[in-house]
Length: 299
Ligand SMILES: O=C(O)[C@H](O)[C@@H](O)[C@H](O)[C@H](O)CO
Ligand SMILES: [Zn+2]
Image (tube, rainbow, N blue to C red):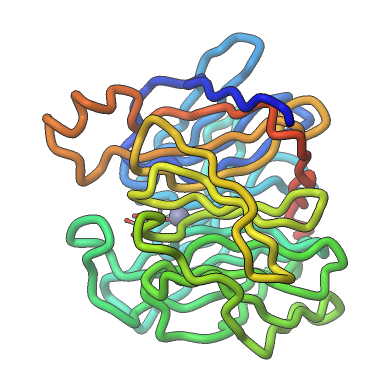
């Protein structure tokens, strides 16, 4: 058994840090602060965070083949040029909705950007239900809506053979799987592979490891859990010193470190004083597993 170590590496205290992505070219961790409206990049060398402010809630960031990044910003897919600090809209979704925003997003193995929406929260996990949808931005910049009636569109990833798409609608308290057609980007045959237990609270972001097991961050559960999507069993629980764990990814040398984002929105003074590292970025080492490098958006 390896010994698991947890360290808070960026202590800036985000409102809702999310969408951790390892940028191998920069040797840095990208993430967003959704309600703090910034895209961040943390360097393990300088131990500093660079942040680019944006004009709306920014819910995910992804690498782009042509360099730089793509983000989901409000209800827009947008391009972000890092050095220039320049954001340009690619396209908008949910034009029929007044009060939604994008939430979690990730690029599939063929370079398509998947991201879903949700109603703006009144407070964490309290919002008008069934307002969200799941979308894909294709490399030709066209957009497809897969389905609607989503509460809080959240974690997503693909199986190692690319034949299954994993997806979380948080308020279903379930981790779901779909059949995936990598050729077309179409999904079908939805089923639940894991229902969260009460103390695990709300499923949020997720990431697959090289053994095909899923790591799910549990919002208000203060932990990441490792699931076997074949058996539907939980294999491991790693607890963190903060409750609002929002998402996780693998990064660092050989993708053997796990990075976990966390949030402070919804915590009162007393809660914050008990968990002073809330809103920080955590690095977990010694898990004994590695992750899959993130795919860049091909458009
Ligand atoms: O991190 C996210 O994905 C959401 O934007 C957050 O707001 C939480 O998930 C949500 O509050 C939990 O229900
Ligand atoms: Zn999330």
